[in-house]
Each structure stands twice: as structure tokens, then as C-alpha cells.
Length: 104
Image (cartoon, one colour):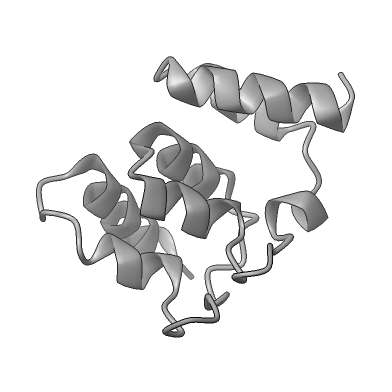
């Protein structure tokens, strides 16, 4: 699978809330692509968090190749900062909390 095909598959899987499919697609996507930033300094994890895409957030955090230190350029928030704006019981907050628990 090419990286372009994997990106398409990743977004199809996350739209269908298919976590296993999204994780499989991520194996074919480079860390450079995962961490590439757009003009607002959004990478895939920040974008997924801002969009409220819980499946994408869970997959990206489980994959563990996203640079969680990236800040977007308007207010300097990281993906975890955006996640703190979600309700405590939301899948996004739980995914960030779980990722924090397994950090070295």
C-alpha cells in the first residue's frame, strides 16, 4: 500500500469508526507525514482533536509516533490542550489520559 493509499484508508476507517483499520493504515504512513504541519501548524493529531475525531485521535496516540509537543500558531495550543476542552468522559479525553499513563 502506498502512503497516499494509506492516508485515504486511514480517513475512511476513522470516518467509519474502524480503529483497527485505522491502526493498520498508519503502518504505511511515515512519521514525517503524521507530523507534517499545515499553515496553522496543525499536524494530524491536532487536526483530529480539533475536529472531534475520536477514532483518529485514539489511533494516532496508540501509534505513538506523533510529536505531541507541536503547538498551533494562533494560540500556541497543543493537541492535549485542545483535548482538555472536551468533556472528561469523552473518548478524546480518555485517549489522551490513557496515553499519558503509558508515557515513559
